[in-house]
Image (cartoon, rainbow, N blue to C red; front, side, top):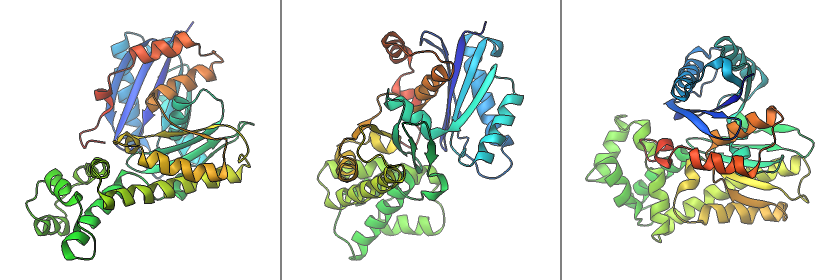
Length: 331
C-alpha cells in the first residue's frame, strides 16, 4: 500500500518538491525553476513541475507507485480550466496514485494555520489573496489582484530614487541602497541603463529587501512605501472577509511569501490594523512553515490522516534549511 505523499509548491521564481512518509518525515527534496504560466499551453511549466518532482522522488529513494497522493499547489492555477489543464498534465506523468491541484495560496494558508478555514495574503514576486470559509468554500482573487508583490516594491523603490534625485521627492536612504544593489555609481547611470532595458527582472526584484532595510533604519520614504503596500494588501483581505460575511468570526489571516521576510513589523502591523477594523477577532500571523510544507499538510488532509503534534515536529525537524528556499535575487 502506498505510504508516502508528495507536496509541491510552484511559483513565479522557483518550484519546490518534497516527499514525506505518513509520519511527517521528509525523505527527499528538489528545487527547480519557476512554473507559473498563463494561457492554454502548460506543457513547459508542468514539465518543470514534473522534473522537479521526479528529482525529489529519486532523492527520497521511493518510486511514484509508493506515493499515495501528490498535492500540487501552483501559481497560475486560478480559473477552473487552469486547474484542469495542470491536473491532466500531471496525471499523465504518473507521479502518484492520486494527483490534486490547487492554487498556490492554499499551500501558504495551510502552512500557517491549523484551522480548516481562514484567509491568506501571499506576497512574493506578485501577490494574491484567498479564503477558505467555515463551510469549505474556496475563493481566490487571482487575476483580480494586481498590486502588492516584490515587483511593485522594486518599481516604487526605483521611482523614489529618481524623485529624490530630481527634487520631486524627499532624500532617501534608498538611493544608496538601490545604487549599491544594482552596481551603479550615480542615479543618471542607473536611469540610462533602465531606459536601455539593461537591468533584468531578477536585479529589479532584489531591490525589495532593500526597502525593508531602509525602513528599519528609519527612512521615512521607505516606511511610507511599506504602509502603502500594507493597506493595499489588507484591502484585498477585507474585501474577501466581507464577501463571505466572516467579520465577526475568529480565524487566522496568514501572511506568506518573500515580501514578509524583511526586517521589522511595519508591514504586518499595518495589515493587522486595517483587518481588525473589519474583523476584530481575526489573528494576523506569519507562517512558520514554507508553503510547500502546507502542500504536504494538505496531502495528509486529503487522505483523511489527522496531523498530530509529533508529525508537525517531524516536519519541522526534517524540513530543508532556510537557504534551500532563498532565491538568487534576495527574495
